[in-house]
Each structure stands twice: as C-alpha cells, then as structure tokens.
Length: 442
Image (cartoon, rainbow, N blue to C red):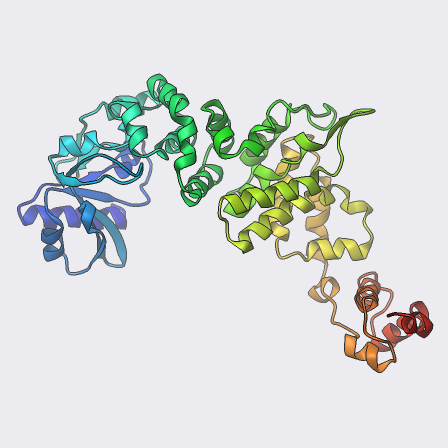
C-alpha cells in the first residue's frame, strides 16, 4: 500500500476507534475507481472540528468555520472535514452557513457527481448517493442535482467542469452543458485571481488543447479571454499551417508542450494573439509584426488576470520573441548568442518546438539551437566585460547616450570573435568612435 494511502487509512482508523464514522472523500475516490494513484486524500467524518483536534496532536485550523481542519501525519497533510450541509451562497463562492449533516446530504452539496463519492477503506466499500460510479464509467461530468443551482452557488464551477472534462477526456453532460451556456456571462463576477488559477490548471493539465476548445464551446472563453476567442476562424496560409486557423493552431501548440509551467502555457496560449489584428491578404495571408502586437495584448491580459510583474514580463517575452527562432540560422553570431543566453531559453525553445509541431513540423531550427547551446562555453555566450563606462571616461569620452552603443559594439565584437582583450577593445573604440564624435555630444 502506498505510504500516503496508509497514513490516510490510519486517520480513518483512529477516528473509528474514537467512535466516529470516517471515509475517504471526493477526488481521491474518483481516482481510485479510475485506476489512478491519488495525489492527496481527503477524509469526511461525523466528528466535529473540536473532536478531530482532540484525537490528533498536530492539526491546522484552515477552515474551522466550514468544519475543515488539516491533520498532519508524518510530514504529510490531510484535509479532514465534518459531514456538512450548506445554506445559501450570497457571495457566489462561500456558503452563508454550514451545519452538521449525514453523508448523503454532504454528497448532495458537492459540485459534480465524479467528486461526490465516499469510500470506506476499512470495509473496502464505495458509497455512492448520486450515480457517481455510472458517470465515471460513461465518462461524464455531471452537476450534482440542479446544475443551475450548483453554478449559482459558485460560478467558477463552470470552468471546473471544463477542466475535469479535459483532464479525463470526459463529456460534459447535456443538462450541465446547457446550464453553463445560460450562466456563462456570470463568470465575470469571479475574481481575476481565481480565474487565473483555474485557467492555469486547465492550460497546464492533461487535455489542455481540448480544454481550450471546451472553453470556447461553452462560451466561457469569450467572457474570460475575448482576445483568444478572436483567433477562432482567422485563416492561415496552408503551406505553413496545414492544421487550419489560428485557434486550432493554438490548441495544438498547447497539446504539444511537454509538462509546461504556467508561464510557458500562457506564452503558448498568447503567442499568436496578435494575428487577428495584423492579418493582410497580399501575395498570401500575412501577419506582419503580429509578435509585437501580440506582446502588447499579452501584457494587458496578464495584468487583467493579476499575474505578478515577473510572470507578466516572462510571458510577454515569450510572445514578443517567438518569431526570432524561425530565422536563427541566418542570424549574426552576436545576435544569436544574445538570444540563446536568455534566462528563459528553455521556455523559448519548448514553445518553438511545440509551435513547429503544431504547424509545418520542421524542427531544424530547434535542433540547431540545441546543438549550438551544447557546443558553446559559458564565456563564449557571456564574455567578460572588457571596458566599462569609467574606462571610456578615462579615455577622454564624454558620458552620454553613445556610451551604451559603444559598450554594445564591444560586446558584439567579443561575441563575433573579433576581439578578446582589453587592448583590442580600446583600439576598436578609438577606431570606430573617434574623439571628435564624442566631443560634439551635448
């Protein structure tokens, strides 16, 4: 038995020894029935918070008002919750009040049938009040009870339905799907942070391309990310994009990513977001400067979703720079090395790989970069500085805007292999930036 499950079983056993009913609950039961290894175990019991805290020496009161505590056992944490029923959800997120209940009532207040299961590990018995096992067998995401009520209680559940359908390759049950269509405009009431986090789970999880498609089919995408919705139906030149329109390409790019971080996933999501705004029909369909326009749009999206400044800058860089990797073999050595030394180079290359696989399939530039990186020494890609601004002043140059140009020219020469010593750098500066040019600066 896996260690985590053994610890969860011990919690159930200790609750039972104290005279309480206790079951595994929710997603871990679903995963067990699907033949998957749960990443965590939640436990539901008729014990109150006070009784749970009295039984276990190490607890964390994360949600006492909702009957939830964390039990710490051997360094692992387990959510233990009292069986409960709930009142109204005035804020569209939390119940106004909770009350002790039996397991059936607890199951009936949950979001989807696949998450409303209990399992008694002591008796090896599944407890199913809402047809959960049937829906798991049939591959359905179905709201528990009235879907309109479930989504009124917490509007983010609409996006969770999409996530579960994408993750498990399930269908959204028809009544549940229709309820999402009716309530989709209400998703705007959800905080930007919660939307961002749920989008992140969809875009980094299994079936992320289908998740994006489901967001569009449920009309949630147009409410949350209208900039991405606009990519649907935008044609592309067949010679480079036999897969179809910009939206289809984006879905395929997401699917081609290998275990993406949130930054990489959003970089892939938004890498072509500028195309609807730059499309022209000349000799063929073109999207001139779509990378630059896309970077501006990506920044607005990231700011709206309350990404950190660091995450925003990284996502914007992925969008702004993604076209450069198409022409790396034609670049000057200095420009190529500057590109390859980006702190985000691994993300850049993974986005480029997925971008190519989702379209023409030519990975020659990707392998060129990988081989170049493997062959370059650290000092070749980041050479030591040969001269500083103080050195230029000592040489008689007046500080001004040209200092940056002069120092960049020195580094270019290093990267190109033209110079390698301080003396050579001084000669280059005196030759290409004569004193009279510096003297005229004001």
